[in-house]
Every structure is written in C-alpha cells, then in structure tokens.
Length: 114
Length: 246
Length: 91
Image (cartoon, rainbow over all chains, first blue to last red; front, side):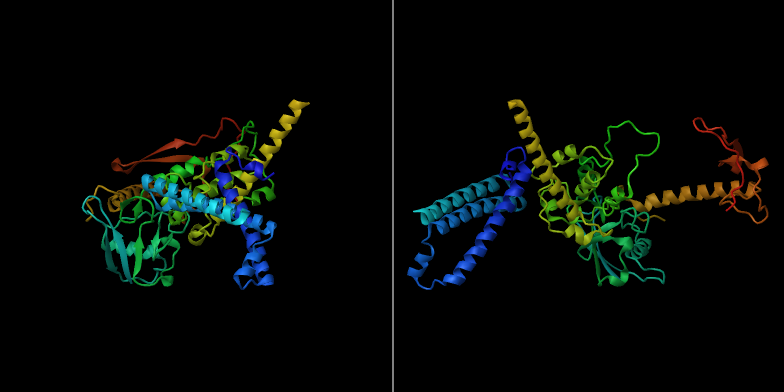
C-alpha cells in the first residue's frame, strides 16, 4: 500500500517517504546484525565466512545495501543541493555519486549473492 | 552598555562594517529596543524598523548576539556585552539593520494565507466550535517577523524555492481551519520537492520564535496530511477502476 | 537637526515628518476639545462634566488656517439596520 504512493505523482513525498522507509529497514537490519554478532561472535576468518553463509542473511544484507544506496542517493543529493550552488559542479558530483553507488551496488551484489 | 552594530548605507559605504557604541542607559531602559533608541538619539543615521515596542508588530526582528529575535522583547539584562547586532541573515540588507522582506512575503503569499470557502457567505459569521477553534492555537499568533525563516539553513541555501517555516506554518494554519475548504489545493501547492520537503527538522525556527510557536511541528503535520491525501487518492482511484469494471 | 541625509530608509527624516503630523493632530484635538463644552466618552472635562446631546451631538471639523472650527451633524439613520436613540452610557 505504501509502495503504491511512491509514484511520480508525488515527487516531493516520494523522496521523503523513501528516505524514511529505507531508514526503517536499515534500522531493523542493524539491530539484527548486532544481535547476530553478539550471539555468534565471529573471531576468525573462517567463522566470519560462516557468519555470512546462510542464504537468508545474504539476501537481507543485499536488501540492506539497496536501501543504503537509495538512502545515500537521496541524502547526499540534498546536501549537494544545499552546498554546491554551481549547477555544473553539482551535476558532475551527482553523476560521480550515481556511478559510485552503482559500483558499490554491483560489488555488494557480487559479494552477497555469488 | 557596549554595543557593536552592523552598519551599511548604500549611499556612502562600499562595504558593511561594525560600529561600536557605548551608551549610558537610564532607569526605565529594560529592553534592547530602549537601548537602540538611546543610540539613535546620539546617532540618527542608525536605521532600524520598529513600531509597537511590545512584540506585536514584528518589525524590529534582528540578529542579537548571533540569535534572531525581537529587540523590543529582549531584556538587556539577559545580554552579554558587547551586544552584537546584525540584520537578519539570508535576506538582502537595505541599510544597517533593515532587510528587504520581499522574498519572505512572496513565499507567505504563495501559500494563500486566507480563508478559502466556496459556500455563499451566511447572514452572520462563519461559526466554529470551541474545539475547532482550539486547533488554531499556536498557529494564528504568528506576527510574521521573519526570525524563523531567516534562521533556517534550508532557507539560506534555497531561498527561491523553499517556502520557509513562517509561510509553511501559515499554510498549516488554514489547513487546520474547520471553515476552510481548500485542503487538497493547499497540499497540492506544496508538492514540488523543494517547497515543503526542504525542511529537515533543524528546528532553528522553534529555537528563535519570539512568540514561542512551533513551525517545525506544523510542518510535520503538513507532511502527515500529505501522506493521508495521497492514500485517499489511491483508494479513490481504485474505486473508480472497480466501478468501471462493474 | 537631522544629521542623516541619506535617501535610503532614512528613519530620522520619517520620524521628523511624523512629529510634524503629531503636532498638527495635537493642535486639532486641543482646539476642538476646548470648544466642546461637555463631557463625552474619553473627552472628559471638569468644568462641563455632563454629556450634552442637545448642543453637541455633532462632529467637530478643524481647519489649520486660524485654527477655525466647523461642525457637521452626526448621521443617525443607518442605511441597512434599525436606528436607535442616542442616550448616555451608564455602567
């Protein structure tokens, strides 16, 4: 139902709502991650690999990364809008940001899903 | 008492500068405005807006020791010396402590700050229950001094597009009015990404408001209303589709 | 003496002009009040303590030349609502 609101009809609200939704998901994941670290306490590299072994955890981490990318895009876009008044510099910075976020996204996908 | 005041007269000065004053106060002088009028007696070239001298007209808003406020309701005893006075930030300076409020009022006008009601005017007033009237408390008291909007970083960086806390709170004041019928129109008017959603709850507006109002809360309520409106539109759209199918 | 000669937001000059108007209004008030030999609302005289609707149910007009005073009747018949008789307010 909420997802239905994220359409082009509400450009302002879409960004605002998206930022909050992604924040919520990331908060859930962070609590889960912290709990899992406290329970399993991975100390060695092997244990750490095991930590990331279960498919559900990999998918959750991947979803987290998607949320992080969206959240970062919206947030940093706002910051650039505020502090980079020059349109050319701003659009260049935004392009670099998009590129970076996609590279990280690809990297995260490879790590979590491969 | 020592003061350091921002001076700029476009007739004479190439650049603004700070001028120091040391003024002897008299017994009745309690508020900053009293001291400023003593200074004006000594140096009549110091320009500032003022009128009611009791926090009702909103003319003498300025930046006092780094924080926006009204000179007439700021106690001298609360101020550290030298008292640094500057015009409100984020708006063009006309002269000394006087800023050009045109942009501020353009944003204010853009939210249609008046009752919109398409019913024929009744014989007497449009009545309102005491409960409905209470919903306007904390909103209608705004005196449009501009202290909140000019202390808002979102307004500093996006003055052309962001309506600012004062304008947005007045937008909400009419959304909350039981006699107003233009809710949808008002919400639609704030949809553009930078008009409403530039507010990031920095809350400088709440901090500086000389009338102790809370524009940040009003803005949050507008966001709630926008969410509700969007949901209703979706529901209505679905109903339309179902009716067509039937 | 106004030191400020600027054309931009010269409040010293504005205030001087306002003072001029204040003096004018004060003069008008003074002359009209002195001529009005009654008490009415905020216009309160010790030598004429009563309201006098026979002689003073009237507007005072003041002219600057020679401090001349003229009078104009009060319109007692409103156009849209019923009229009521003027009488002293007693609280």
